[in-house]
Image 1 (cartoon, one colour):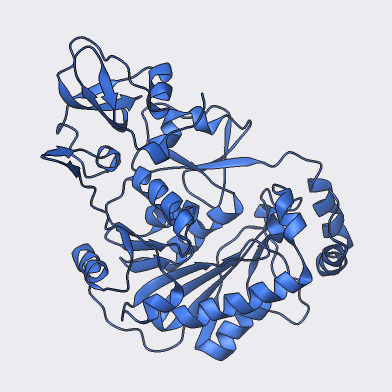
Image 2 (cartoon, rainbow, N blue to C red; image 1 turned 90 degrees about the vertical axis):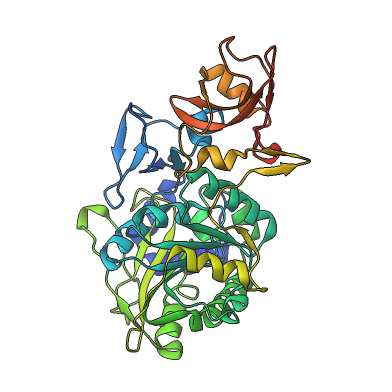
Length: 414
């Protein structure tokens, strides 16, 4: 792969000779595949064989081989999420710094990897609002969060400045901001083609605007986690310094071990704790993360999941895509159960009959094919499962069963 000359000149100087050579050698290696299991949907038997734990995240593993996830029904049922190992460091940060229930916001959440991790890492009783400004990507986020199944997750489609107008104050805000994408070069050649120094500076300006817009929504003493998938200091250390000096924050350390090979700041005049994941150094794609706390006296707060839902439902500026409560769809006089109901953790297992599918049947179901169910299957709505994990609904008519899997979730090809 031919890297942009401006990128190579700047980044090689930033990394130093040894790190730069190891980074270049990483392009000749197959990127590692990592997944994180959903702690609320753990099956009775192992999902994968030959796995290696990712040490900075619970229930996360590197796989020896990359399977075809699209054809695995357990992936679609929310049993696990395919997630870059560097981003899994968020688990370590949250478990270290968040020890009581919080109201949390993932501001730029699509496709949902960090949101699914946040919901698993936050203390019981927490409420997570995961938001995506781009509508198309927001629909992808919605699908992934519904498949995870946790009821205390709200999905919204808003810009940062919208939240500032709602009087909504959060205890934890994750800003995984849009960036120049240098950390994706090994996996995505389009990121290489789109890179330019001008775009780096554009992203830096945009990131500061996002941080400024959302800052009023973080309570005093609240936690801001800032991350990018890029290496340069313009989008990273310089923006962290901006938050500290212009917005009023102090930086916090996160626990690491030397054997994890996580790189700190590469600036000689920077002594603050930040965390870089560099291919060839760490078993990961590129990532930067910093943990900041808003200055000021912490506010006493009490909230319930119901109050968070009411706030989102009532405020005209909040575009609420899901309030965490899976509902049936009304079609004429009939209520059609939704796939989100079957996948929800708070949906009683005995509400509808269940039918276990074979792997081939489950794949056909995810492809939205209709087929007959066993003769002893009751007529009406039934939940279809694979390895006891719900996938969605079918309506059994006797000689055949209608497939009710959502069209926009269906896999395109078998």
